[in-house]
Length: 275
Image (cartoon, rainbow, N blue to C red; front, side):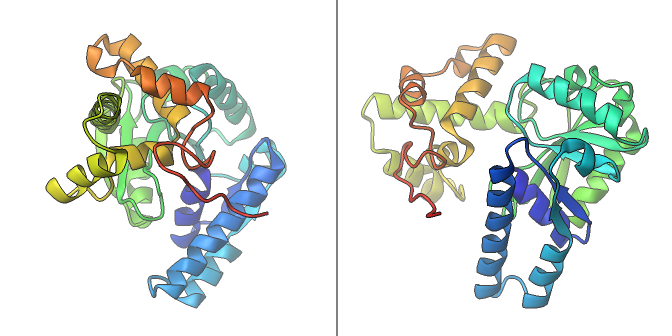
């Protein structure tokens, strides 16, 4: 999701730097931003001048230290693993100015635990975007006990400037969106297991019957089945509810490498970009 966050930041007028430990991922992200903007221009959603201005504000960096040294806000969008996030935030704490806000895009992990890796827990906050970031309006701002009101308000203001609708939630496993969305997605997978209907028809039931813009199985493909599995396992362990127990189908698909859009196959077949 990093490229989408970078895109909306640049479009909001912020000088934006994007980095990754894997440089080809940075190049791919920049190409995806350019493609999204090109599509927006073609559909009349973005002017050519606005697209060019956004691209001019976006640049890559080869290292985390290079990327974040001048930053006032850092938004992390890496793997959903608390230990890896803590290691990153420990580095961010060393590389950035003490007043820099450090935000995590986690969809379920404890923001307080991530903040504990820093010497500025009051400046660490959850800023949970939704996929695809340049289209979805919601940003879930997650405030833990040690987070300052000023930090929460600042990131809410940033979200509004990005054209988003922020909501503020407490730092409880799964927050609001994941606790609801994961239950729906997992139940849809159980319906596939039971042969109730095809993935496309299950999604259509939610899209046409309840007005959802996208069905839960297609959302799962976009998020990544491996990510959805990790979140479900975390919520099942943390909350103890059987609603979050991952279906065998999800485990098998991840084991077989069917991860959704990023692998070319999940509940749907996806066209892979040509190099």
